[in-house]
Image 1 (cartoon, rainbow, N blue to C red):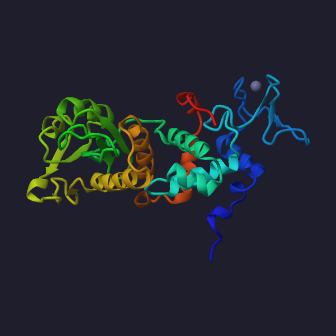
Image 2 (cartoon, rainbow, N blue to C red):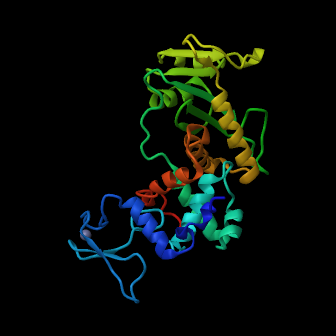
Image 3 (spheres, rainbow, N blue to C red):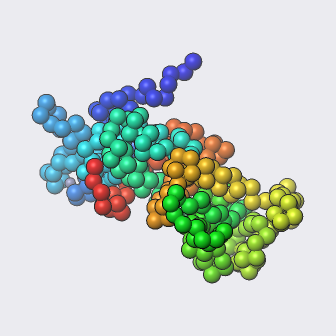
Length: 310
Ligand SMILES: [Zn+2]
């Protein structure tokens, strides 16, 4: 039997955690966050020196790998951050702040702070267009269950709406929208899907005019229980089952793990589920690789989330 993945030293030792993150973020040489010099810094030793402190030979200033990342200005140990990243990356339906608090032995407030910052790291840093070259992008929308205590006037009204675009062999991107109609959907589809893509949706009327913008648009009629049909492209099945599968994970996660989230925070949670589904097992991404990709996203996200410190 192989050893538990959680026995890796960087989950337990602060020095190993620094070493691991340095090796990943500075793969091409130590980067000074003050002056930008690469590969011109020395590690400071000595009993009184903080773990992970480097000194730049150019500007003479000290720094650690935490500068400019979601870890900056956090007092939480880096090996605990790595544990949290692994747990969040590998839990298909997410992990609540309460669970993180109990598992990591940090305060509930710290757990909440860590989870929010890790969600920042999960944001797609290099958006670009989905699809292209004839590849298939499925689009669909869903209505989220309202948070406990939030009033719902009538079916379909005042429920949070999410539109998701899933490249069948690639990334997922979701948007919290005010309304599901052509006026709201068109700009999202146009800005996120390459025109030379094969769009697949259900029979909803609002996709018909938008569909003409793409090389090929095919839809299945869910009202007549048609969920898949042969595509005009040989060897391809026309369906939107991949995006439906995504909604199933998203809804079970939001209602089960997070006990529903308010509309105000919904986009952040949706970003989290997008990240995991973009790096899903069926695309050959295992838990360790997904956690590694999440870790690579910690850089440059600090500025977008300055409101809380922990
Ligand atoms: Zn420097």
